[in-house]
Image 1 (cartoon, rainbow, N blue to C red):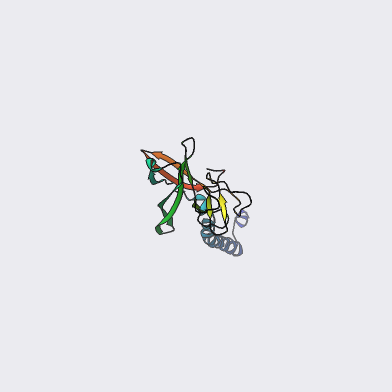
Image 2 (cartoon, rainbow, N blue to C red):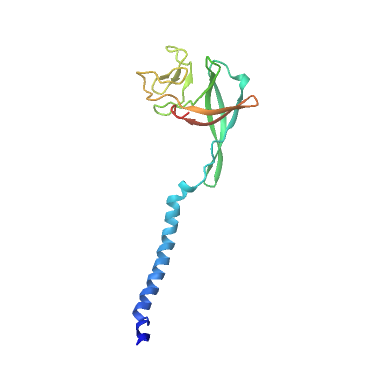
Length: 169
């Protein structure tokens, strides 16, 4: 009589087998989806790669545009992306590195090109104005100040990293 209690019926065996096979198949389908969803979170970031832009001796109190290239990796494709920065020294002698991208529509700003507003950064797309320190002038289209680049000085050279909004830099 005890032999009958421990026997597995054909129906139970098929139920266990099909449940196990179905579970493996479901796991096989879900794993790629989960990896796709969590991969950006788990991926290591490259950090802030600093790029040599200029000699510190070249930097004056007048903003000067420096062009440089940053290596960018997009999946399997690696390329160099051109970037620019407006760099100058303030009254204290501290280096300021500003992004030339207007915060209104992303046009490129220039220094001291508007004859009506000298000593300002000027965006020609919609007549946006920024002061020398990158602060947006009230009453003009830009809604935020110019981004500032992270920077460091090593061996007399200026290295720039990522441009960050004013509160983060």
